[in-house]
Image (cartoon, rainbow, N blue to C red; front, side, top):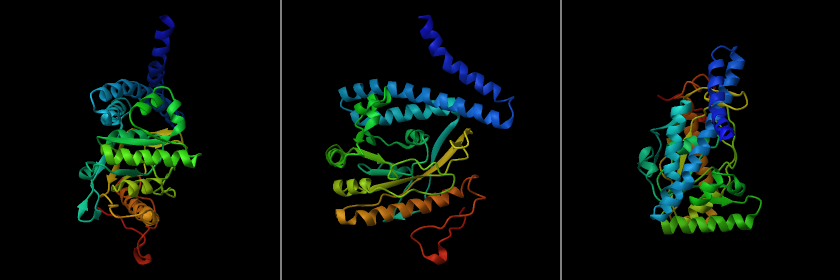
Length: 311
């Protein structure tokens, strides 16, 4: 048992060592030590919560509440990360109105729905931990299914696995997801950018249309989730991590009732424009964005395309 004890004790001791020496090191080396300590801590937290998720998923399936599996693990990850790394995400009120409805906490209760969000870094897993509604599942690339702990949990908790290299299997997965959404009222969260942007300023990558075709096929609303640019908290290019709170907005649901596949392009554009404008607004509610020149907003007239800071 000695080797097992040493193996389990090494990561926590290394984290403590890195955090202590970061106090005394020069600025750049201190930043690197804090970054490495954060990465190790986050990896351990993810493995721990995924392991918990395997057993939680089995138990919840047995008692008929399998749809809650990802929600309960998300909340466990939220509090684990907040306690051990000092970083979390919080929802803020959006000024946007859609069909007389506002977003915020109320929009997270929409069920079933397709939730879509901007994808910045690996830390977005924690964002999901903080905002994930009940009876919701994620989509993920099919290769994640074979990752120990995390893949096991995802396979047991109604994750929609997508093989992006195979259009036929990807379409079949979305067809199955549409049926689950309708029959079990199970929502789905998708990152429509398809990959991480690692953005250091308010920007979005082009959106893929899969999420919007799925929403139209299932005839459920799109609920956009917009996370403020958080490179001041985690910047992988600069190997920098600083504990803090990151704001995100939940926009009002965008209805899809009566839409057909021919409307997918317009729905994609409408959603992306709304998210881009909210991302610009959020960047000026944070210290990180207050001194950054504003990008031009999309979907508005040229005369007012540059959004001003809003209080």
